[in-house]
Structure formats: structure tokens, C-alpha cells
Image (cartoon, rainbow over all chains, first blue to last red; front, top):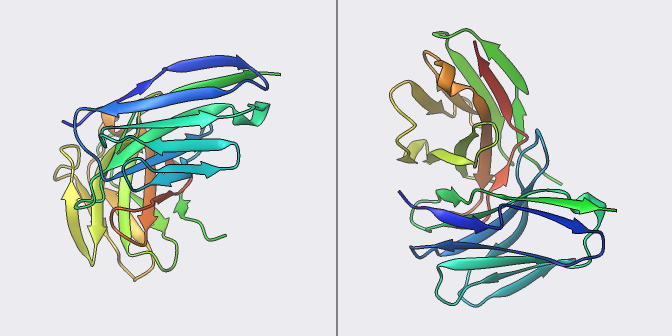
Length: 111
Length: 113
């Protein structure tokens, strides 16, 4: 089946540092979505990307849709303790609506 | 801000029993999805539903699973005869356009004993 490889698997950083994570796939997606999940809760949509090369920001978060349409990147600038959680990328092919999720990146921020 | 709601938040059931998980989508959304997440793992697609029909289902979504929109507002997932391996968080997600954003509910934790 289709797989998304998300890296890194986990990160432990100091408050104030910038964070980068990415997702890659062997197949093309038409939409990339980035979600954050806190323990015991549902994924919360952070950023949606629809065009190859698109760069979109949401506050301190910036995400990019890779030119090849096979990858996406999420950056968090000036991290704060509430950024702690699991970040998931999800790719979508528009003809199904089905989301394929990455394995997640667990972010821990040390105050 | 509109949000997806799910009930119950936690369901404990014995193996072989039927369970129904309920979702109330965001009001103007027409596309509905169920996903599940086994503890510590990634989110997995189960089924998509539009215009009162299943659009796509995964290999996980076998004959024991069914979905329904019984009253035009709720969207339900039924598992006819639960197995131990059905224990997971089940998330409902909804969207107003196919291929665009999907908004997730808080999930139902299903524990099969």
C-alpha cells in the first residue's frame, strides 16, 4: 500500500529553537495536510497545501508542498512548551478523499 | 467555531458484541470519513462516505463494519461482532469538499475485552 515516511521520529529541543520535519512518499499526492495531536485527542489541522511548490504559514508554522509532489515539510519557529505533541503529515489524492498518514513526529520542548 | 463531535468518548465492550460509534459532522459538510488509530501508531483510513454511499473502504473495513447516516445529521460506524484487535481510537472526520481539508472529532476509545 501507499506509505508516507515521516522524519524524524522524535525530537527533543530547547524552548526557542526552530524545528523542521518532513514527509516523503514514492507516489504523488494532490494535497498535503499537517496535523497536531495531543494525547487522547483527535488530530487538529494546522496547514493545508494544494499546489506543488506552495509555501503556507500559520503563525509560527510554515509548510511547503514539494515540487515533485512527493514530499512536504513543516517548520516551527521559536518553539514554545505548548508545541509539545505529535505532528502528522497526511497526503491525499483528490479522487478518493482518503488520507494516508505518516508515522508522526513526537516533539518535546524543554523550557 | 464549528467542530466535529463524537459519542461516546470511551466504550468498553466484550468480544463478539456489537458497538455503534456516533459522529455529528460540521453542519455544511458533505464528505464523511472514519479512521482508527491503534495505541502508539499512525492514523489509518477505514472508509469514506458521500451522498449516502461508501466512496472507498480500506482492507480493514470488512463485512463486520458498516456505516450509516440514519437521520441526516449523525454519521455512525457499526462493528457487528467486535474482536480484541478492534481496540483502538476511532476518529470521525468531515469535509466540505473532496480532496481538501478534513476536520477530525475528538475520537471514541474502543476497548474490547
